[in-house]
Length: 196
Length: 327
Image (cartoon, rainbow over all chains, first blue to last red; front, top):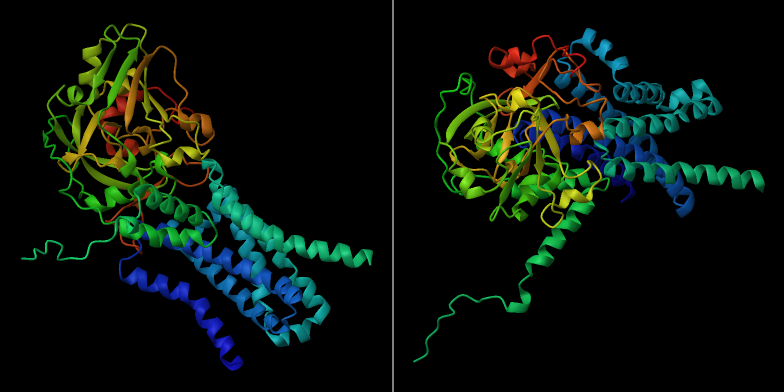
């Protein structure tokens, strides 16, 4: 049973991607497919980021230590959907014109925030294998991977900034609440440990 | 003899969901849709509502317009795309919200109050307005400020027809358009996106231009609610949001009105909002656009034209005006 758990989580994480590929080739993305794909991949990046950040609190609260084994996979799926999101922007919006992209990123603060989140995620993805932990040493590796908190802040900023002109914060607020709870729990645990 | 007239088992009255409850459920779904997983749920839920077909609404034919520039040669966007991908925030901010919720809009009886700096102010009944001038079909390009475009066969007549009948005074310099704002019919009014009611405005010479359309129909039929029934404005050389929908008031003023988008985000949306590929929106470029239903996913976006391709007809209105400053 436990043997199948990991492949099952892996397959489930691929479902959104599989659906988007299927829908793209079956003309099921609505009147504006480019917009749909860009938004869907952005949404899934944020959802996987929330799932990744939820692993440690869930593990500690429930005592189910095997949950830790899914953290790396979920983190890598966050990166996977994040890369697709950037590809949607670079391809559909900018037509893969890299000169135009380089000019566009600093011009638009919300794009810069999203781009920052992806750049910060890259070293985490690159050092996600076991040998990297040995090379870096566990302490340094862990310090590096705390960057995920900065990724969360940059990603939230990106989403809020994108919606700012229309004062339409219903969705970003949901993510803010989830991420604030997940990071807040960590701060609370630190403070409590320091007091003890 | 036993007469069986109930050959099909009918549901017991208590089993039928009252419409109010049904609508509450829809509201609940919408609320869920605001949640994290909800964006995709909303897309799924909206799918059933998306089946929009021509031929269900009353006919409203129009003769081919003789106004220069009024019949674009571009390939017309499908009825389905035009009626399922809408920005009409009174019915929700997602593109598929209006088609799902605008059925609540009651378009009869309907009056449009024409007032302000005019010699003959009048409350027009919609039926009277429909007979004011002969209907024309006009095929206009529509460029949304968000970077997408459509080609739409509208039915209506030049706003100028109405303007000349109400006789503006010498003080009339601007015309202000107000959209209905009734929370009972428009669920989107609960959100603070804009300062309701929706308000748009044009300079007098823009409003009087023959291309400025007082619009009642689409594809030879009356307007579907989500497209601004029963009467709306269409100004083809400006970004789509200038073309206010479901009008209840047209007011002539001496001072330049402050539009809803100017009040919400003045740094992003100017009074003029003419389509201009050279003046970027602060959050995205306006140099190119994606034509809905025409440009393939992996095709490059098409260049946006100055004044949305109506420069020949309207360019002279802005002679000497700094379009970077008056965006």
